[in-house]
Image 1 (cartoon, rainbow, N blue to C red):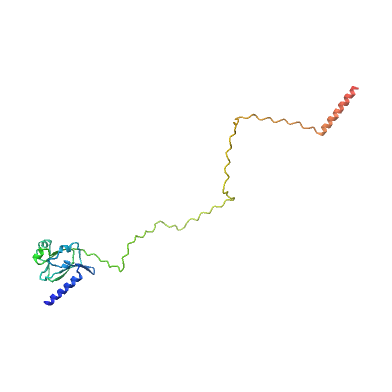
Image 2: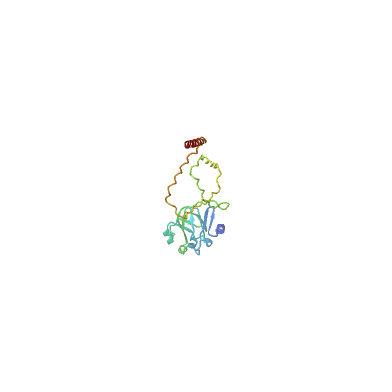
Length: 235
């Protein structure tokens, strides 16, 4: 009997040291020590300890009680839990340190076997959630996410390309770099320009052709003949 008490005391010390904060994760399981460092005692504020806590399938809850004679009872319904009706419990735990695995989803109701302590609030309602997979931790910081790579273009790639355009041939003569300035516009006459003009002057008649040398000789002989004839007649 004395050895059993020593064993339970040592087990209680180990549990309290290992999970002094009230919950410790071991190999993907969360071990919940009910009441935290105050344990499962009438002076514990179970409601405050329970606030915000999540229980999942695979976790374990620990009841550590300094009075082993006060058993822990698991009840079937919420009505029994609220009224502290301990007449028909589902299970009974009588050790000073009790480990209870959470093996199914749903509501579980635990109360202290002492009716007075149960009415004073020493009871626990656990809503067990589904288990969630635990990813193995990275041995190094997890890389940040990167934007997805753009998808390749769906446009068809031509297999051949048209030949390059021929270069323009140079002009056969040099292109002047600059051009002469445009001619100035003619200034208007200082007097009015007549709208009509006099008829053109007729061309002069040509002179008769000069007599040739033989014609002149004939005329000279004819004059001499006429002169001799007149002299002869006057005799």
